[in-house]
Image (cartoon, rainbow, N blue to C red; front, side, top):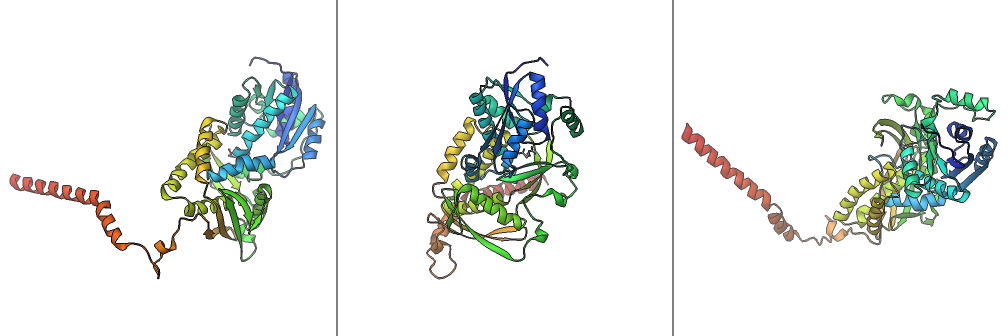
Length: 415
Ligand code: ARG
């Protein structure tokens, strides 16, 4: 590989082993000064400690941002409105965070006059795709470095040796053998014994949810309020997005709701076992779709379901900043104009179910739907409707009958 030199590199930094080793490695390999970037998406880490650690590891500057509000307003809520869930199960917490982090990294690169950016993603994952597509879309002139695809180190042990040789304090990990990516919208847990598809995820793999077997007895009811497709209140109390998601993560997590164990198709062509926790996301998608069931007309509801799949793939595939997402967003936003109202959900051990819904824009008409007193449905109209609705099938049956007769006549002549 041709050696390129860089003056200053902005590196995505989580404080974990890979991104810690990246700092000296980038300095040595590219002769560059390193500025680290860490965005708080609600991963629940001590950000002051992360900043101090980056500086202690050799960064000349460590930028740390609280991105939680932007993450919710600009990424999570659009995804809720779009009902974006990958392959029917994954609410996309990691995939939604990447374009925001990548955009901030580009902005910081401009601020500090960097000529390259770096990330700590592996060659097998989707995250490299999401970072690099965004980097190239927003700043095609910047160099992009993926040390984990380049360096000679193959194992954690080699990385630890590398760090120790340079006197760098590394995260002490006698801890779990899992790769974890957590934020406000959920948590992904990979590796370890879960690479065997038949093996049940071990008890110690879970972070945000309690084992449903140890959930509180009984159930609780909550009412989630939406305005134009965006969650705005719990039990009638208005709540900001970050707070609302934290509240639901807590509540549903306590009851063991939101555990997902799936095998998914990665962008790079392989299948992987992914264990997710998405307590708030599970409740919010459930409630939001329920509200759409009463506020959207049938063709729009069904059409939007098709769009949702495409929209989820766009997020997953890392093309958030592309023109198709913008175009679909316009459709989605328009469709949400009447998605205002409330949904009642009952949460019990390992289970959340919708038990009620209401909206000022509801298209449900009890007079039309009722089988009791007060029925206004025109029964005779149904008769006429069915005459025409079934016309094609009657015609088909008639044609088949005639063909059958002709065949019987022919068979008779032959015999
Ligand atoms: N498979 C999920 C995705 O591609 C989760 C990735 C989790 N990332 C991680 N670095 N552990 O979005």
